[in-house]
Length: 408
Image 1 (cartoon, rainbow, N blue to C red):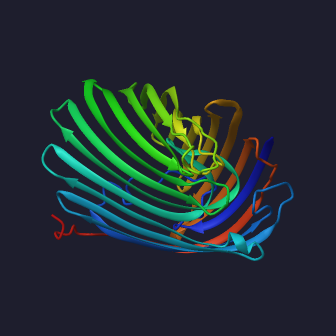
Image 2 (image 1 turned 120 degrees about the vertical axis):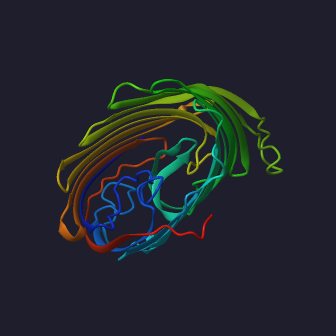
Image 3 (image 1 turned 135 degrees about the vertical axis):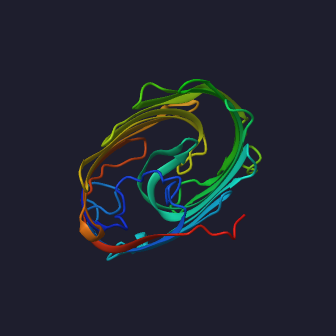
């Protein structure tokens, strides 16, 4: 079956920002590298009208909603330590679709510590509760869901990088993630990873890397173990073009389910071997930037109706341009294919396209016009179209202060 969804969104917001139509990756540092220490606070509110609030079928339920959010962030920095703490909360209410009412939050803690002249350690913790229309895979966001669902996630990642020479680095990392969906039938679980990386500068603008990662995950009481060995090549093709190529092999073992329940059929452990990797190409100029990316991975998907292994291929193309002072254009296209291992007829495919025009006026007021289209093909889908209109206002404050000395 196939499903189609279109959205035309007109948003008026402030520096606090409107809720994005397509979820974008969070920046690695909320304050930027040039900010020494400081704090940030913002309050945002908006009202929306949605022609198909559930995205579950053609001619779905229309509803009016209200959204109120607030954010607070603090940055501490010393010559050897940098710590960022951020809290973001929002209250979403609908007039008739009360089951979609949500009190969402995001908590973030980032810490970087220079342990010595050659060693640096980092720690990143994120907790979130929100509405989503996406699955989560090994490589990040996976294919789209058939509708909207509540999700709660907690993740922690820690890294240690040691520079043994000017041209050589060795890194170690470990992470944990827990995912839970509120919608019955959408499976959640946990995953833990550990890995290492060896990198060496091969020449001017060129770096070679070797990477190994072990992952353990469990969805619906069915566990899987995977091991990936890969190599990467980063190079600069000119003053404005950067590229990264990755390739490797992954071995995934999906454990049987004969011991889960007495009456359950005996399903033996299965092993799959797949090629993984990807490529990234970035073109950056003074006023615009173009990113093209391809990624291939294997593993279980959080948010699916089955805990089986899936091979996922994702292609994305993003373009950003500063048209004039205050006027910004962004376009994004993304295509995802997923195939269940051992069941070639169980395929899923999603396509997304986003065009956004944003104008930053005086006193922090932002006008935003966005158009989103999406298409989903799977064995469990329905057609759906959506139009959303919104208006909002907010306040934001960013202030830098002298670096503190209480962190050493």
